[in-house]
Length: 228
Image (cartoon, rainbow, N blue to C red; front, side):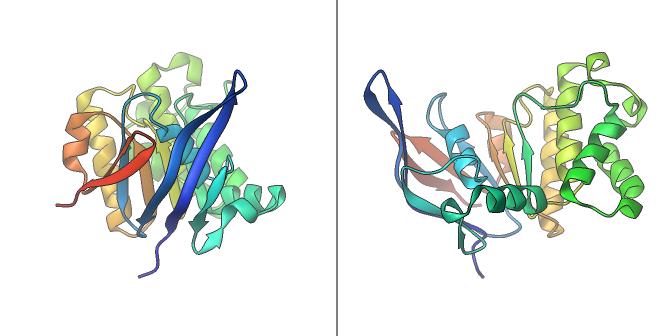
């Protein structure tokens, strides 16, 4: 089976106060399609940086990320934007919701951006809102929702287009334990049904215990931790 994501000699550094700060160095790993993978590590270990590299939001200093066998750092800006729009979904820690749109409208916005046919919108919106348990809040706007509810809207918006790859940065950070476990169960169902592949960051030990594939980022390196 071909990998969906592969890192080869992946290195990322930044300039800070005229010094080069290396965040990731010579990373090598592969992600198989229709799997749920967690990246764990202390704050500053490079988890978000790695997600940004995989999502073509940033470019490596050295090495390469391959998505479906394509070296994405070599794509032009327009090509990487199109890749993200059509094949990737993102859940950011900042949520990124449109303030004046309702829950339903925010999910619809995600479908519109992804180019999903209009005749599929109603069913996809309903299904995504059902999955995150926000039926009773569907007409509310972000300022009327709690932080946890806003996070669930961001998750619904990301999964509704059924992206080939979903990248989620601490997607359960604002949720209570019950809802966090529910969302992970949703993620597991999505990959088991071969609807998407998910790479997420987390440091929640309860969630890590639920997952089959865990990578640890430490000292600029990555190591595969466990497989049930």
